[in-house]
Image (cartoon, rainbow, N blue to C red; front, side, top):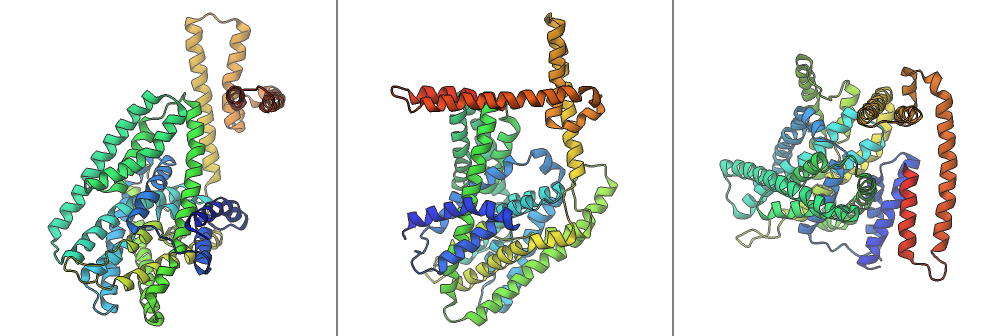
Amino acid sequence: MDQLALLFVLLLGAVVSVPVGERFGLPAPVLMTLLGIVLALLEFVPNVEIPPDLILPLLLPPLLYAAVRRTSWRQFAANLRPIFLLAVALVFITTFCVAAVAHAIVPGLPIAAAVALGALVAPPDPVAATAVAGQLGLPRRLVSILEGEGLFNDVTAIVLYHVAIAAAVSGHFTAWEAGLDLVLSAVVALAVGLALGWGAYKLMDLLGDATLQIGLSLLVPYASYVLAEELHGSGVLAVLVTAMFLAEYATDADDVMTRLAGHTFWDIVDTLVTGVAFGLIGLELHIAVRTASGRWQEMLGWAAMVVGVVVVVRLLWLLPATWLTKRLHAKRDIDEEIPVSWRETVVMWWSGMRGVASVALALAIPLETDAGDPFPDRNEIIFIAFGVIMATLVAQGLTLPWLVKRLGVRADSEREAEFEKQLAVRAAKAAKRRLKEIEAVEELPEELSEQMLRRAFEIGVRISPDMGEDERREAHQQRVWRMKRVRRIQGEMLSAARHEVLAARSEPGADPEVVDRVLRHLDVRSLR
């Protein structure tokens, strides 16, 4: 098997792991990691040969962009305090606790190298957290905080990592320079993210075509990441800013085709790239095995102690942080989503899985210092890092569904249904207001006006059938039933039309491009 065949196996696994995970109640990223481990143990499977400095630029931008599309700036702003406590404060605390323990237990490990180890194992993986949380049906407030933590903690951890690596390689470190680097990295990332977001927004208006706009949306996160890194800024933060800008401003309510096609396209990208990323984690296990080189007992002991520090520090930080957030939340009239019970706090604690970023940072540790000496304890750092990744991703990922079920933590389905109903009512009222505005300037026949008024109500009913209870549902029940019957018959008619047009594609002299254009019109009509 060569590298290309291995890539196809990972892509196939990414597709298959989704329904398999749903069938057995297991997270797809964890299944892909297990697949990678199995492949790594097979002799005929080649070792992966991806330069470590390319793993983050290749995998993180599309994954971050896809994750941001599922959120909003308002959601981040509402949860700024809990996200800050997790994504910034907890990363710092974890980094320095791991560094202190690693420096104490690994003989001769310098402080700078220990801090690098702490930084690369500190951030929970944003992809694993969102994929697992979304699949388990957790309360939206927990998913929002986990998404925010996962998206922003890499920014802090990667900057800390680079500062520590620079200190270990050069042998020089000053606190004020490190702080200045952190601030400058954030400023550059914000500038790049906003500039590219604005530029992409304007360019999408010029392109017009849905296919070209979606193609541009795939290039933008890569451009944002690379440009920010070239200017010594945070590529992760730049991608987040760009994605949030486009989600906020580059959304046309009437551009139905681009929105539907874009949603499908990014779901596909997210599934495939996530699968490949976590498959690579398992495949890279051979590096950790090779670095042990007969010192299994000693190095497994070090890895176990660091895993314990990572897990315990997260719990010890979450308990007071959650309590403090609740106290501040109670004193202020703010719309902030926080854990409301100790059960939800425990689920948040056990959701701290490490993944793609930790692997990439571990493999990117330089081989030598500026003086030409080997990087201190590089093999030990890589082994410990993989121990943390495997323990948190596989062990926690496999047991998290059981823990969620055991604690009875579930999404508030009644609240979601009520919010959906409210949106349905607002949509129907907006349609009625627009109808009145049209009637004010255009003379509509009474029959047409009544028909349009019924259509306005049906807009809301199609979103939330329960909304009819507030607007004389019994009087409209017959009409709704008739509407469903009309839609069913219309759907069967359109299906027959699509089959007929598609059959013409194989007829002699038929122009496939024309057939596809007509078929696309029928497909769009079917969505209405």
